[in-house]
Length: 324
Image (cartoon, rainbow, N blue to C red; front, side, top):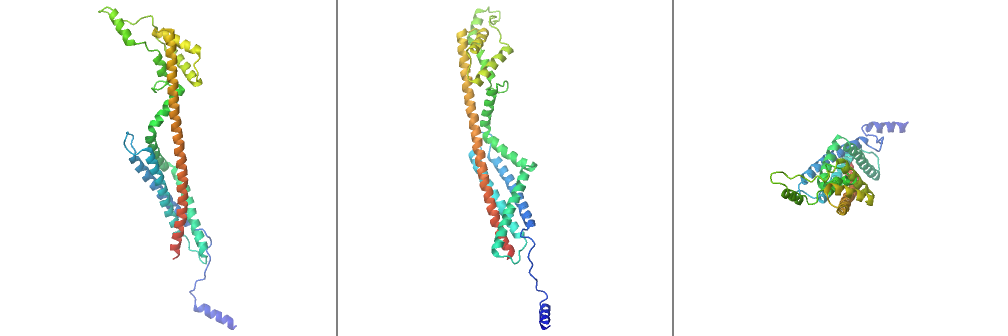
């Protein structure tokens, strides 16, 4: 009875002493979401700023603006800076805003703060990925594409020429197969032929072209184009095709069959050389794009890894300030 009375007296003497209670969860999701949203927003703002600065540093005019290598290095540095700043801010907020853990060992508090920073970085990365695939992301991506197109415009033009020759397209591409076909049907020294015709014609009558030379028809041009496309694709011009094309050239230009065959072979060799050059340029463009993509992915990985580390570190710093 006396023991019970003393316990009641002590309890009544200190009525305001709080009884320590353990927190219900070791994860403060509210602080994590807050830090992740802040990190994703800051990352988006910095990316848009970087895209704007990148557009001001390049130019479509020759010898103006930065070259592609400098722009690439600047983009990598800005990406790393964006990750470090945004992840650090998000991690610090998650550590500073989290629930205070009561009766928890110091090492456990350190681990939990580190985990909060890492979870904040992971959630911010997912939010950023979602934003970059939305309409806002298309704005940033469009700016990056403009920078890349300005830096690689000349190389892409060469690649387009390669595709034009390989497909035998006509009309809009000056380097297409039609150019080589039309060049074979040009008159042999037309200026001299015209002068000779003018000298032999009466002074009062205009010179009339010789009627013995036939005019090449669109059907014949199409047939010769098909022969050249097939021969360039297979890498060999058959003898019968060369003789047939030479016969058409001889009929339409007035040159001998032997000279016509030499013209066909010479034009075919020029087309093959042009195709080889454009293929090499296209391969160089593809290889450069492969290397650029590889470097970008590797440095993006390094930047994200640095962001995860900084977010975890800043979360522990914010957590310590929270517990002061």
